[in-house]
Length: 196
Length: 192
Image 1 (spheres, each protein chain N blue to C red):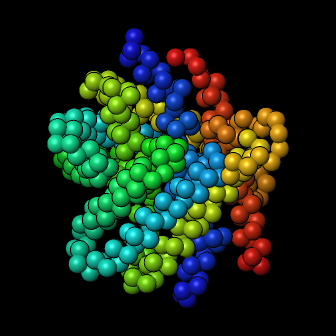
Image 2 (image 1 turned 60 degrees about the vertical axis):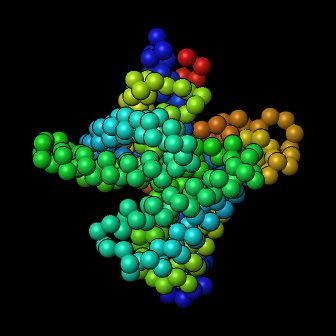
Image 3 (image 1 turned 90 degrees about the horizontal axis):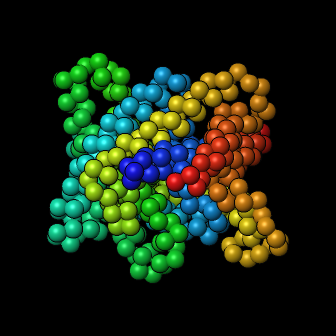
């Protein structure tokens, strides 16, 4: 598989959220606005790329039996770094994302890429895969956050688009599920048209 | 009274799946049949309760006294992973029928964010729970998870027979149904 293909497949064809249904908890939990979705996506991308790099470097050193616990330790270390850095430099975003920052550890996307890709490929490919998957995840979160922000609050990235009250339900929990359902359906249609 | 508030709050008002978005992966992944969702709920309840007890003790008697609370994430996930492994080995020896019922769900639980989420929430300073309250909180959250996933599985079994538009079939329709369920649970807002 070419490097470009590894990079771009995560956007529509193998989008982690819309197609693989990985990392759904943060995808639903933090996307009350496009900004939060973007922040969460970039934080996850960082963890994903860094853990992919480390896992692909140490893959031949770790015995097969303890590989999953070792991956978890690597991932958890980078999550702790992200969490401390974000708390220091972006306290507002840190408060908005809250519990979902430590929960990047159990984001099945990060673990899934370490196990399925980084532990079998060289470091360069692992970086590309991490970037692609991370940005695909970011794209999905920003789209869902943007959709919910526009419909729920009439704004995008905090800029007002229309005045008055939006549909509050889209800012609250049910809107996350319904919005994601329709985005997956749209992505299915896109996938079909690009394949034909 | 405070226990009732914790229980009602965790099951209905702040339902772990439908209001807090934790444990969505098993909620979508193993909810195609009612029987498997019951097995998953049992495994979650078992591990969530045990993990909360262990991590509560570790947080308050190891991490806080040594002032290393920034190791919370990394130590919790290791504790949960080894706990799940241990539970699997013990169950296999002690109670084969229970192992038969829960066995295949146990490895999946390590990456169930509901477990890590609840163990982190149970020691949050603004809750200030005692150990007993923490355990009650964990059990109530597990019941909330069970309620949400079993109801959802019941709906999904019927959803397979319904004529939904082609591009909405499968995951998209399931998410819309989950949204409607979350809407129903929002009706409990404000009762405690």
